[in-house]
Image (cartoon, rainbow, N blue to C red; front, side, top):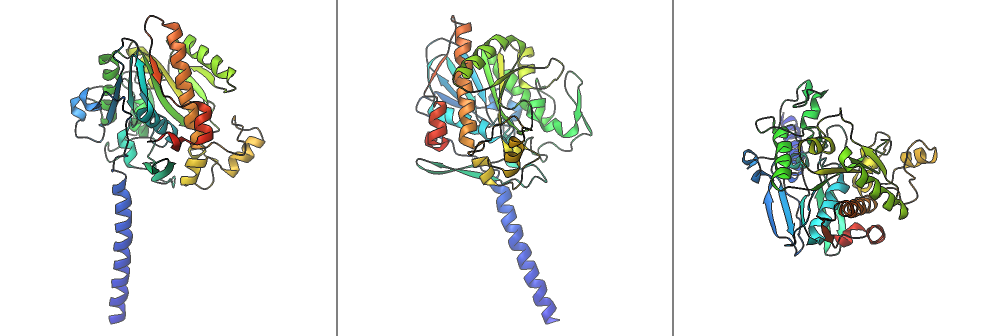
Length: 372
């Protein structure tokens, strides 16, 4: 009996230790990532400033404002719409920590889907965090899920019906911020978040808006700039200028009958000219092998290398793979060229954002060199 008691105590102790470790890892996902805005920051606020019902919820998130004092266009940039698409969040963070606005205004929301940063996708085996080597020391960030945390909006319906179109999608898409627009004030948790961003665009009279994303290498829209039809000329000009830099982006026009996405609903329901940009991230893909922090940072996967050699994916996947620094650099350069194209099309109301790191600088020096 004593031996049995001893075994039970050992098993209980082991269980408590494992549970403690798991609990600590779980709770760490609720600890906000530290961001260090540049000296040009005018003010910071919260998304709940636009929809007070979000205050105190896991849908609320920090908003950073950079105002030049010189009249001009207002730019909005969202990262972290899908928190498992790290380049979008990190590119937004680089802007927060470096940007200086010489004309007009810049509004940045690095973690648009705050709820999704508190959890990882089930059955994917993804890490909860990744660490970037920065000049001042290591910077650790959360790696979240594509949608919001199911604990914050439960249960998923069998079928998600988009408001107001009635379009039907899988029930889990009810937690996808980029299927929730234009949202509604008294809707579901994620519909309220989407509604708040639309209200922000209207209240701040945003002229041009960006939504930064990543996708699996096998998806056709990787390395693309997607826009509402009202932004087609601006997008075409930006893609052409990027081509001159030997940076290939495809231009896609938002499908009119695919509802809920930022580039469709922002354009339909407000005066803004919206753009969504996609980079290629192997950790999103179905062909990937080991799923770990190294894959986030280095973007090297042997199975995708074979696929690229066979010509079955659009990426070139050279020796350096698809590292985070490359993906962030593409977002920043795309942002720069689209803003320039917007200014050319609207000389009466322009915006000038300085200290945006150049593509080659980020690729060669690493994104960590641009994190404060």
